[in-house]
Image (cartoon, rainbow, N blue to C red):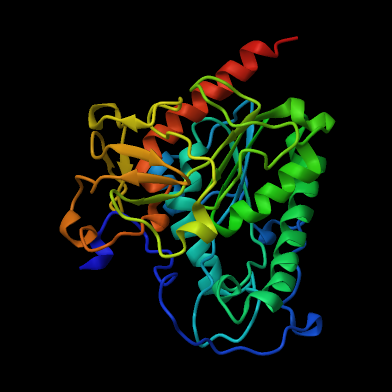
Length: 335
């Protein structure tokens, strides 16, 4: 019955103590590195679509902007000893395409041409003790892939179009590094429409020259939030969330609350949109959401952590906002 709920279940184990199979991290044991000159190393290109994505947004049309999306951790099997995912593993590829791409990255397709590289994502255990120390090395391997993919994207695909950076969870950890290395105070900053850095803490001073966007039409900055059930706090609130930027993904301004009537829509597991489904309230580092009015919502009533649904909950809101920011960037940067 859970499979009929509106969201794909990313990982709901952050508050649980559990043992993982593991080995010492070693570079020689890493899976093969992606070659981004080959299509097989990409989950999505404008010329590389799939039926699952098409079921949400249709076939691709050429846009005047690009979106580079970095997906969250989908590699979490407790019995898998590897530190980094093999992008040529069919289960990994299927999860990226049918879960992350279909229910997250799809939100930006209306605004821009979608680019999604496969990368050797680090295993979920890197976020837990006692695995975190070796996990840094696995995280660096993952980032190296994302960086190489972005370099190839700039060289072969982008053609100087304005750029949206979109990410979730582990993807946001890598996307923050991309912003710092390629955009923050660099010439490419002028091409940044917006960075949607979702599902991981981003502090107000995360970047030197790139600030939070506080109006729905503004561009050149970033947006971020972490979603939790209203009137509850995560177990690691102080460590992982407090002090982080909380953008309002319904009003897109500095209002600390939003009404249910302003909510544009949840993207359900059935690929249907559920408008006017929830309201939100902001506190330090957390975006509180009411229980969404969707199919099988009873099952969701037992869940407090909405991390797995950070994007799905506001899918239609993100889609329309990305279009607005892109159009405004284009109007203000006409030659």
